[in-house]
Length: 297
Image 1 (cartoon, rainbow, N blue to C red):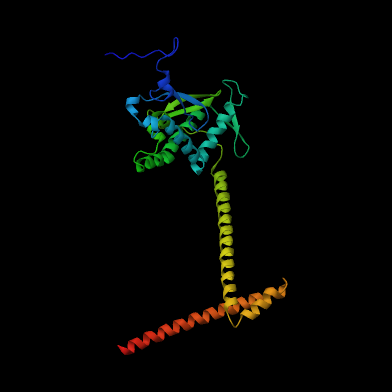
Image 2: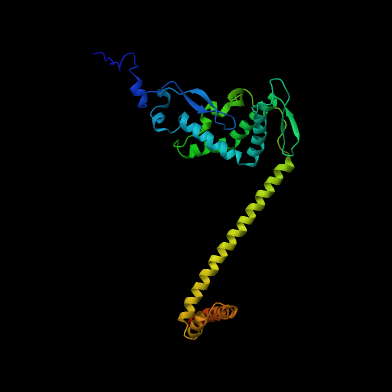
């Protein structure tokens, strides 16, 4: 017996409720495809349901999760020294071309890290974008694939999308324009740079110095906490020490002053010496006992 779909309202698609529930795919989906992770979008046809199966619904490695991975990896790459170098140049050219200050055919330029006027062409912009995409794939893209493989397929990778992996685009007039594809071309000519080696080495040195200062601060804080815990333990021992407890109570009752601080420091040193003497005594007793056992043998 043939099954006939009942129409839903006049002239309405009978499949729309199933589309809304995600049981069948709508036509295209929008995913971010900008080479450097801008917010522009490009239409990408979603794979057929038979090609992805139930994973399209649960989102293991479908276009949406691939796009999310693309955005995250782009941010990660831009934080690396290489990513910052490349993205600085791409963004400088993109900013100039989309500034509205230049007419088509005019000479584009941007101010480099030294404040110097740096001229470039649209081809330079294309080459910079291509070099950026290629370097990103070789860096965070490979890491994305490794993590996806280690997860047994539970994690998504933008490298599984030929659009997100291979398409090189530039942003012009608020639109992403495809200018190259890494499947066909992986060689890109040199282009004017935003900063030179000295500029980026200065940034690296500044970051290293900041990190070193942070490590020194953390060590000081850690040492201070350890010292406070040590003093707290010594105070407990002083209160329990029959020879020093009375002196400790007298010092503790004194008003805060340099004299009190000196007396308190002296008591702490006396307790440390007592602990050391006790430790030495235990060690000597242990050594004496071992010698005694040898004689018995």
